[in-house]
Length: 228
Figure 1: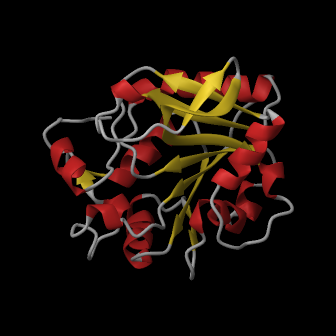
Figure 2: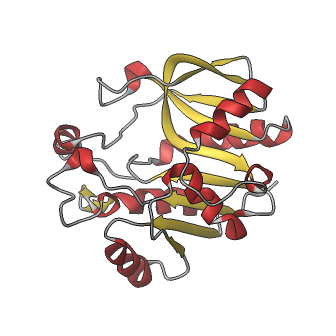
Figure 3: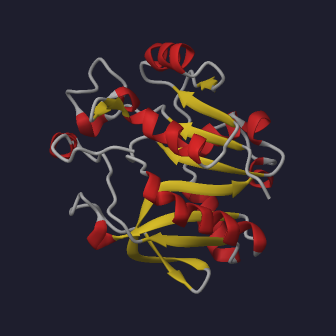
């Protein structure tokens, strides 16, 4: 099955990288002279996603202008009030409905060598009829050594044990959004329900993981010569 749709989460305030985000949204901060959002878009293009969307809130006009100038086919969902990660998906429900879709955090510096694990995650989720799947990484592979673990995996099942880090990549089935209201809530609520029902899987990524966690890590990343 071909995944056709994705959304990149771009609405947050980026408080942990202040003062850089005082007058610029975090997705437009640059690593190796490339805005963070570009790493997300490049990854999605590389894996063949034809329909991409973003959500916006903080300094929304800057992101909208960037998208209009550089990626005019990308759809934009502006949030007048911040809806959190779950509410953002429901707000884009009409765009995302139909089948499986992908969700990317825009503060991960996505790399081409993620694609093998992403492809495996997508294949496992779909062929084994899971409703969701998360891409994880090993804690010792995180560039930010202080980043805390989130989940583990038992066989094919995502479980609530803190061993691996969530990378910011997920696949979900659009049926999960059908009966939800457009109100602020975390997508973690959906994950927790799916974990309880054993309807969510995961894949552990084995390469180094780059994430713009905070101001200090952002500055350290500038010395890494990161390219897609």
